Image (cartoon, rainbow, N blue to C red; front, side):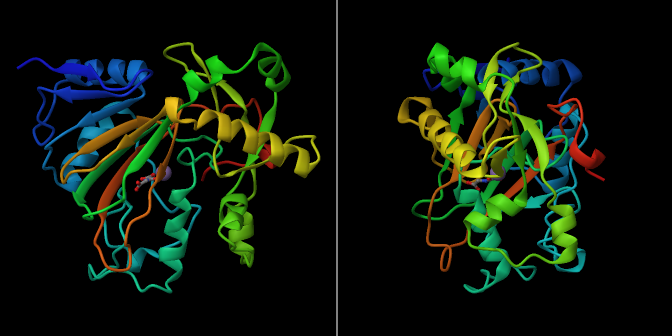
Length: 301
Ligand code: OGA
Ligand code: MN
């Protein structure tokens, strides 16, 4: 059966049918999917009952995988529930029990409720994220996506000119700060040194411009912090208006791929103290930084 793509939002997002991701795909099929990612920004695959290993090998068609937690250090290796390349986007501990309501991990996970682009705090931000739903809660827990190309296109010409060439600082210091975390260890301070990202980026495949915003962005280089924060907030509010947003209502075994180079996303509330939500993410690393040089030659290693 040939693969088909059905666009489900005015600006972006397509639902894909005619492919079984639990079986290996050919490089031609991978190319068709990559072209569709470049075109639609978000792809929804339904009824894909895949293992972690199948998810990882499918993801590798699109580039090298990020190792989650390198900078975040939320979960020490011995406490991890999943393998090295799987980001655990669940509310479960290693024993598959719902996280204690006071746990630090639960608190950190709440960061996903803010609009963000994955790994924008890394010197080379993420290319793609692939999120597989294994167990979904009865109510809530949707994921929303915002099309940052459509948002950029809709900015007025004067504002486009004002933001042209601006560079932002992205760091977990800022996104965790929003959650009320402030007491960082020496190691965290080192890991969380801000990286630079251009505010307007050009998609390498489509040539389209987009706003590169994220909860991790907390400063514009050379600007007074409050002036920067106000502009970033205003742009975020503009870019996440209803007409630019798609809300994904999860069913078990949905797999959603999004292009972090042109979208932001966030998780919606659910009863995380009582209901299980087991989602697993693989992340395809980006290919290049968005700026010519990082401060202090920061790398992702
Ligand atoms: C992620 C993420 C949102 C969600 O996996 O990167 O932000 O709805 N997930 O779980
Ligand atoms: Mn995310």
